[in-house]
Every structure is written in structure tokens, then in C-alpha cells.
Length: 385
Image (cartoon, rainbow, N blue to C red):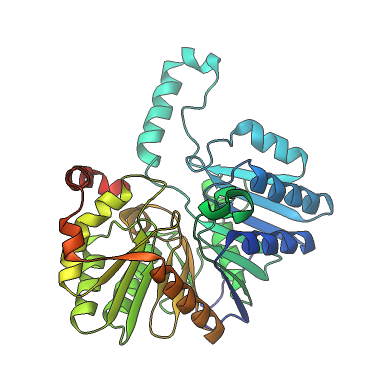
């Protein structure tokens, strides 16, 4: 179990940015094959497709050579996972848990137990809107892979060709990786009875290179830091994001930054795996455009990346600029500061911008009327998005 001690705010020893799934997962598989002691993996989606099965085989090989392997997947994001899956993995020596599993997975015998059905229904009502949205893998407490890539082949050109989703991830090394392990331990031990002794809450503060929201305090802390960094940026705020449904304070922060002359640009998806998300996002465009924010919609494929570029540093991780990430889901992001990382993210942002269509007030006015109406109607679901 990791010990947290004082907050670690220094830079990573090494940062490597990945903007394509093929290179990202090739590197992840190689690090898994070299693991000596531990692998802690948390993914919202862990699919049993070509990619998922390949990574799973690598994890099983690691377990066979004595590496402790722990996996957390989300009950909604990974519906293929169920109790029998965990038992099968246990035979391979892999410990796995499902975060807030779907309560509708029950046996025929349970159909006769009305009280059990009611219990599962109320469990669903309480928990379904809180998900584990992280995408991370920590190896030997020394290397961490963080980003917006799920373990699903949609992210790879090898399987999807030019339809592969656009994502961003980062491989980092250094003593700060222990903080990510501590976060994993905290969730592992507190959410799953009998999983081990209770782990202390990681001691993180403003300026930490690790950003998470596993507690109400940390959720508020890093949300406030996000708003502060946007409003007090001096040169730029360049955001690439998959699901843009901002809370009021986030929207106001972007407006204030743009009005004082900061270069505020948003690259958002023209098409999404959640088909109506762009329709809702466009509801927020008008006031942002009037305030001087530039908005671009990415055209080639589904945009799933989640990055924020400020003056001399960047956020990379799983957080979206929406209600879910800010108010409900578990997320994990890191701060990158190395010159090479910032340059790579800048170059990728400009490439994505070139492959996007800039939205103007005129184009917004000429949008399809039925999308505008549906977008407004669906705003009632914004706290679920």
C-alpha cells in the first residue's frame, strides 16, 4: 500500500504524450510485459474485443510470473463484466472488481425474492449516476498510463482505420506515481468490503501534478483550481473535449477569460458516440462566441480526447467539461509541464483545429432547426451528462 506523506507537487521525471491508440496501447502492453511487482488498472470501458483480449492476455501472463494484478471496471461502462468474469480472472490470480455493478444482473431464482429486487432497484437509483470514469494503469508504483483511452478497439487505426477515435494519453514516471497508487488503494479498499485494510485518503493540494475527485473536498478543490486557471490565464486556454455540457461557473470562467483578451479556443466533436451530445453543446455556443471564445467542431471521426492547455502547463486525463465529471463521476487527470509535452499538445491541437470547422454565429443560426429544439429539450438531462 502506498504511503502519501506530504503532497508531491514537483514535476514528473518523464512525460510522453500519445495522440493515437496504436502507439499508446503498444507501449502499455510492453510495460505490462516488463512488470515485476504490481499492476493496478482502472478503466471505465474494458471490452472483450481484439484489444481488450490482448491486454487481458498480457495481464494474465504477468500474474502467472508472480505480479499482483488488480483491475477495476465500471458496471455501466463495461456491461460484459459480471460475477462469473471475476471468478474466471481469480483462477488466473487476478483480483478484479466492478464499480457499482448493474443491479439488473440477477438469477432466475432471485425473481421470486421481491425484497431483493426492491433492494437492487434502490441501489440502482442511488448509484447509477456515479460512475468510475478513470482510464489508468500503474505499473510497479513507478510508471503510470493516464488519459482518455478506454480499453476498446475503437481507439486504434489497426482495427478501425480512419474511423478510429481521436484520443490523448500520457505515460509518466517518477515518485508522484505513488499518489496514483494511493488513489487506487483508497477506492479499492473503501468500495469493496474485505478487499483489504482501509487506505488513507491521498493528501493532495492545489498545484499537485495529480488531480482526482475521490472525495467531496478534492472534488471542490480541483474544480476551483480549474476555474482559477481559466480565469487567470494570461495568454491562452485551449481545450479539446468530448462532452461539453458546462456548469455555470465553468461557462462564466471561459467568458471572463475571453473578454479580457485571453486566446480561448474549444475543439469539440461534430459527431459523438452519444449522438445528442453535440446538439446540447451547441446550446452554449452563442454566449461563448459573443464573448470572444473560438469554437471548432472536429470532422474526421469521433473526438474523445480531454486536454486543457494553459500558458505553460496542461491537463491530460479522463475529465470532460460537463456535469458528470465535475459533479458525479470519479476522474483522474495529471498536470504536464515539460517543454516537449507542451509542444506535442500544441502541435496536435493545431492539427485538430485544421481538421475542424470553425463555428460562427452565422453558421450557428443556419443550423438544423430540429437539432436546436432537441438540444433545448434534452437540457433537462444535463446533470446526467
